Length: 205
Image 1 (cartoon, helix red, strand yellow):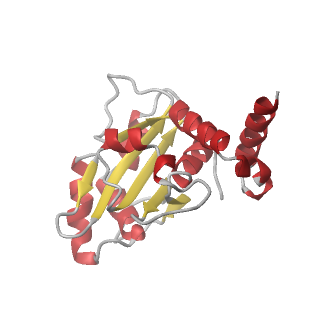
Image 2: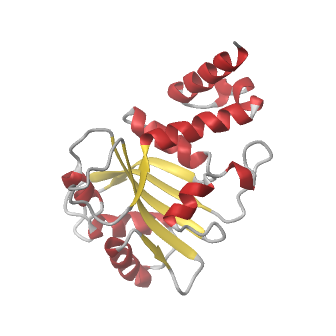
C-alpha cells in the first residue's frame, strides 16, 4: 500500500478493518474528457454487503456507531471517495478534491455505474454527503478525515471522521483479537505493525 502520511495510513486501515477494499493514492490523469489537471484521490474504497472474516470480520467488529451516524446501510454496496487532512487549514483543498469533475472520475473508477449514470451520480453526491441510488442497491459518499473540523470552514457536505476516532477503532480491534498481534508482520505497514506491537506490549504488562 502506498501512502503519503500517517493520516492516510490510519484511514486506510480504519476502512480495511471495517470491511472495505481501499485503494490509496488513486491518480486522476489530466485528460480533455475528464479533469483539467492531474491530481490524486487520497483513498477510494468499496464495501460489499456480504463481507465476512472469521478473525475480525463479524457484525460486532464494524464501527456501527459511525455507520449509523453517517446513515450508511451495510446491506448495500458502498463506495467512498476519501480526502484526508492532517493540517489545520484545508477547506480549499477539500473543495477541490470534492469538485464534481473529480467525483465523476473517481466514481467511474469504482465501477458501480454505467456511463449514462455517471454524471447523474456525480452531481448527486456533489450536492450531498451521501447518495443512495434509487435504482440499484449502491451508495456513494464523500468522507473527510481530519484532526479537527472548524465550524467556520467552508467545506462541501460530506461525512466526517476524526483521526482519533480512526486510531481508537484500530486499537480496539487489535486488542480484541490476539491473532492480530501474532500476525503483525503480515500487515504491510510499519505504522500498523508498530501499533499492534505497542498494544500487545501494553496488554502484557
